Image (cartoon, rainbow, N blue to C red; front, top):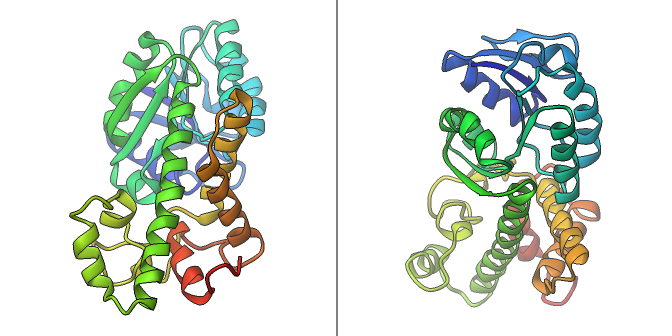
Length: 292
């Protein structure tokens, strides 16, 4: 397949590289990052779209997505698919889809779960929103870049699923970190806590797969000095999106709001920026109950 790929950062570069390694003709553009090996570099975002059947964007936010979409849609061939894998607000995803339709294009919003490790290994999960016809076109690409894709509904449904998923993730990671910090103060061995919780009603992905305690459970960023697999500032971004969406539809999400406030403090007023989102554990270790 002839593919344009715009946004070759920590996530986009390995995703594009996997597509190229699978035999697709990939042309890439990023204003800062270089093209991975096996790809053809373009001089502009519009240039990456020339003749492409699918154009993939992996961008940091809704405003830049809208800006890039306005640039690339006129350069895309009629009937091509704009596949956006960024994590953005639902309104931006729907606005871009509407613009694509007006330009004679198809659009899919398909944010991902799995982090840089999943992007590199080709094991991402894609949550897709958009027409079934467009999903069918890009499904083979999901199979290359990931191990699971779910068609969640119409335009914006992929972003809605991602926002809900990561709100759960932020809440459960905080709870897991609090539990380990409490266990320490109660004199309970961390490995024993893991052995109990990981096979009991308190189990979660945050405990079983991405344990925030070094040396406990499977390998995770905690075992690498909390070097980010999923950075705390990205978790904060997603939690803020969840609260923006909740306000827009009058949803009651008090735990989501509390998690957002905690990550905001951690990232903007403490040492969380540039660390993995599971580094909440050392934060709770050194802070007394009720100190903020």
